[in-house]
Image 1 (tube, rainbow, N blue to C red):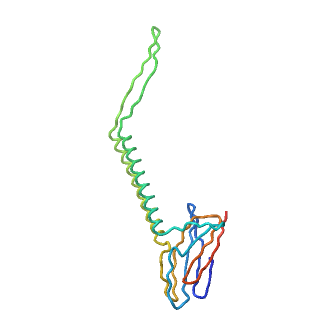
Image 2 (cartoon, rainbow, N blue to C red):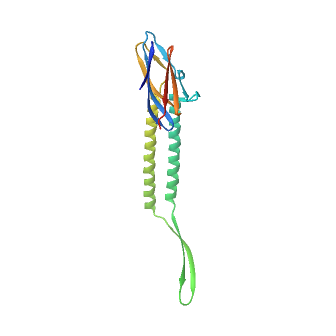
Image 3 (cartoon, rainbow, N blue to C red):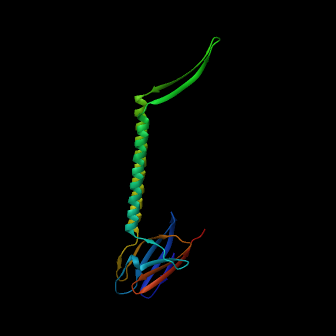
Length: 196
């Protein structure tokens, strides 16, 4: 945990995790003064080792990404299950060919046989439906977790005198990141280097 303490404010920030190329930080801002101040998401900035801006994700962006990802996965699961069910409903076709040899002549033959078992088709479709339902349940669970994380992302907050606030900060993950947190009239600066 890294701490920056000034006359009127105090900021704690600690790296929590790196996941899918994004760094997650726990952020806490304390108000040491007798007047309140508001911290807006755009008052928290990030830059890389070359001074170029690094994206910080808002709660709304994280929620939108989570919902889009879940919708795409659900559509893909439904299309896949539909295709598998169609295939399970089709009869099996077998192609035969061969040769017959007798002392008096030789002959070749070829043919096609088609078989269909309604009970096998029903069992296959049920298995496909069960698998799709399990996948949909997993998608729903992942969406719930992603939305919970989005609700924890730091958003506009008024910090009352002698009080604090906290939230999650999610950024792109360069090798080195420099964060600036504007708390009232004071600026708190932090630097982190990604370990290998």
